[in-house]
Amino acid sequence: MTDVLDKTAAFHTMTEGTQEDWDIIMSHMKPFAQSGGARVLDHLRLLEGDCGGFAVDRLTHCLQTATRAYRDGKPEDYVVMALLHDIGDTLGAYNHADIAAAIMEPFLSEELHWIVKHHAIFQGNNFFHFIGLDPDMRDKYADSPYFEATKEFIDKYDCPAFDPDYDTLPLEFFEPMVMRLFERPRASVYKAAVD
Image (spheres, rainbow, N blue to C red):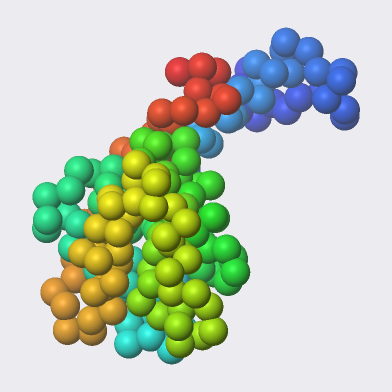
């Protein structure tokens, strides 16, 4: 007897799909989706060795950001958000925060999603004036209920996380947290289908 994971749908256009086809597809999708944390970790590892001119590589920066949040007692989902906030660096030099936010959106609260999505603009307060941009760009979000939380993320965790001498926790420490966060989405069009 053929294992269900060896089967594939019979249709060649989505308009011809049957219940049997979609049962097959969902039997593949559930374990694939639940292992999303492993794929995210694999992608995060791509940041290792890429310093981009900074004093530490991009992976170390992410680890330091997460380490600082963890040591400050932030909840696990916050720590994972801190770890992955720059995961978009390798794919989107011009929109890395948007990429990180898109990856994490189904798994984060509205507040944490907002923080990661806007962190680059808030971090710009520290350097935009050096590259010809408005350092006060973040002020257009002053009315957001998440303004102060995003400012805190930058000031306490993201901004100081470029220190080659900081006692940074290794990626292995955070891996179980990532795997737990990515097991099940909080919000997604597919949530009911995978529950």
